[in-house]
Length: 276
Image 1 (cartoon, rainbow, N blue to C red):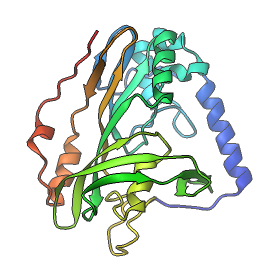
Image 2 (image 1 turned 180 degrees about the vertical axis):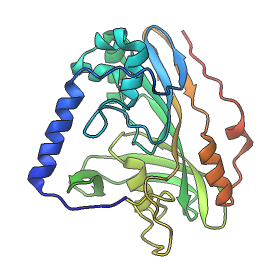
Image 3 (image 1 turned 90 degrees about the vertical axis):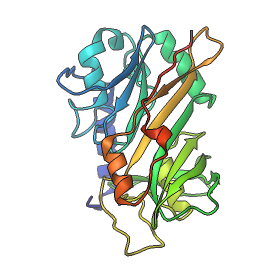
Image 4 (image 1 turned 60 degrees about the vertical axis):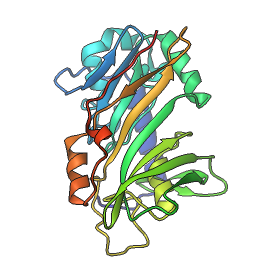
């Protein structure tokens, strides 16, 4: 990844252009792969591929998750309109894989949007990080503020938005660890910035590098971050439904290369449970 400096005016223009594209009806593209974990009349749960952008924007007008979803569920998603982000309830960074949910009706969108705002959607991630976090599990509370000098990122700032992350170390190699992460808030790049903040950046993350180890490989967009689980309550249901996204083979391979043995439960087939 090459980081370049741009003018504030240029950044504003690009942001405006991206907003205009996001408000346009996504171009259906059924040729794109779409790993569907679960689909019913209310929600579509997918396992996003690493390297795929979540929604159309500059440079990505026909190759995103929304384009793929419109290629299969365009009739339902059109009814939500730009006001409801065409059904998209949250986003994963381009290099991040894992579970994403799209609403298929205005009512289901509004219901889950309220749950997200009330922080009642449980999101669990797995990540490969430098070193061994100390302590092995803990809570990270550090406010984040967005900056954009050509490359959008966040920095720790007392004037930023509140951000809360929990983490647990599951396994370690000599120089890296596998951690399970739950985010209570959903800020831009929250996991990446928070893990750098405690000195355990994601392996291969050039935007949030391992500051305590200048010799560590910086890589580019090849870090391993996977949203393994989403859990939320359906409308008119009294218990949450849980959706698991299997780990990509590339994640397991990266863990082995770092000398990390994955717990057997992560290699077992995933079972998704929707409760009425």
